[in-house]
Amino acid sequence: MARSMLNLSEIFYSLQGESTFAGFPCLFVRLAGCNLDCAYCDTSYAKLKEGSEKVSVAEVVERLLKFKVQLVEITGGEPLLQPATRELVSELLRCGFTVLIETNGSQSFVGIDSRAHLIIDVKTPGSNMSDSFNYDNLILLESHYQLKFVLVNEADFFWSLEFIKEYQSQIGALKIIFSPVIDTFAPARLAELMLDSRVKARLQLQLHTLLWPDSLRGR
Ligand code: SF4
Image 1 (cartoon, rainbow, N blue to C red):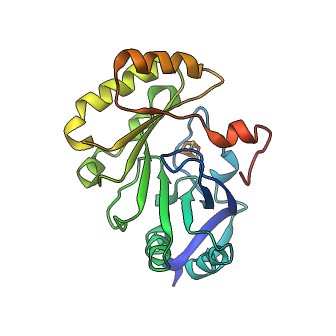
Image 2 (cartoon, rainbow, N blue to C red):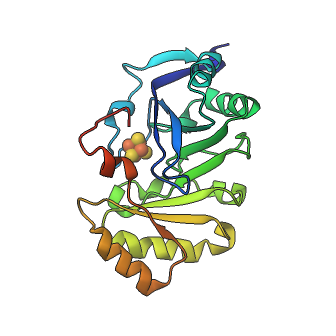
């Protein structure tokens, strides 16, 4: 039974802001605990399990059903650290939800229902966590998964181009997102670099930071 319990940071309803689903009203399940320490982390309150709520998978599903919203994202922290996340994904799919999982790319995808949409962060050198990527997952990529590069600076942009080139055969036609950290990398400069390079990726600005710049959580 312990396997079915989750460390929950928060559940909230907002707009999806960091994938090809950006702009859609979406439920968020933020799980507590993370194995990384990214330079730009904006959810430090969810990095530790301390202060989180222990909730069963069934209880989380019950709370979500009350919103009557069909799109749900499981995020963190790092959601794949918790064994019960896989059970939560399956249960949400069984209930008819479209399920997104935002992961930092360090944990194995084995055992995750492949109908879920994984949004996989590839950590760049500017995050200080670029050694964390789990390369074994490259053979488990599904065509509906998405790769996201959060770019701190121009060096991250060129590093990402190299990554895409090197693993092109495994990445295939996956959708690729470039998201600048706007405090350190002007979006207009990234746009110029993308146009010049002809990279097949889309530029994305974090919707929630544009809409609610002062909100620390629940958005
Ligand atoms: S993976 Fe996400 S939650 Fe973890 S430190 Fe990095 S940005 Fe923060």
